[in-house]
Image (cartoon, rainbow, N blue to C red; front, side):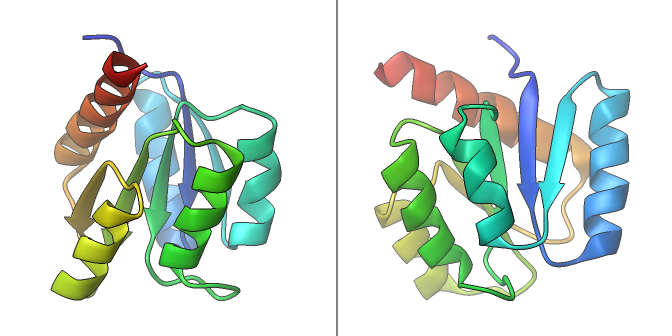
Length: 127
């Protein structure tokens, strides 16, 4: 299995972004963060991230709308959706709209890293 290098975290919770990005960097990932979809889209359009980790709740648009915008800009980019709210409807909709996986927060870092690696490898197998 190959390991992605560049992870884009999109979440409106500053503490989550800070803690998770620091812990991912310790595992040798390059990490950039955004608190809004509009901040993240230039990174996606530039082709920087290997994987996006996207929260369902964002201040500018819903995570599901952001997922659609990401997939429009980069159809093959793997996106792992996160939420602090258990929502079967949102998870099904996200997966139907192209999300690679869906996780509930809080999530252990090891589990998140595993989902990132699996999403990355699954996306590259489909190409």
